[in-house]
Amino acid sequence: MVGRSGRVRSREQNIILVVLAVVIVALLWNFLGVILRLVLFAAVVYLVYRLLQSWT
Image 1 (spheres, rainbow, N blue to C red):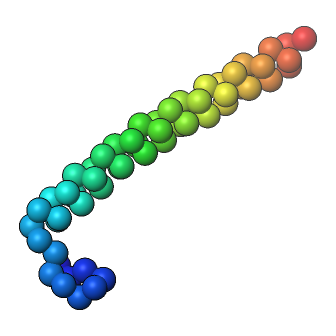
Image 2: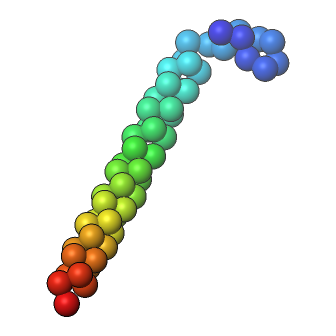
């Protein structure tokens, strides 16, 4: 793999970049999961609220 400077990246640099990419994606995945659960919770609360509102 050729870097921006035109030199060939070493194997160690590639391993570090792969590990860093995995860590970043894992953190973002966890963050997106939390956001998705909050949005789902808010949607269910809103639907229950509308249902209760229609009964009164």
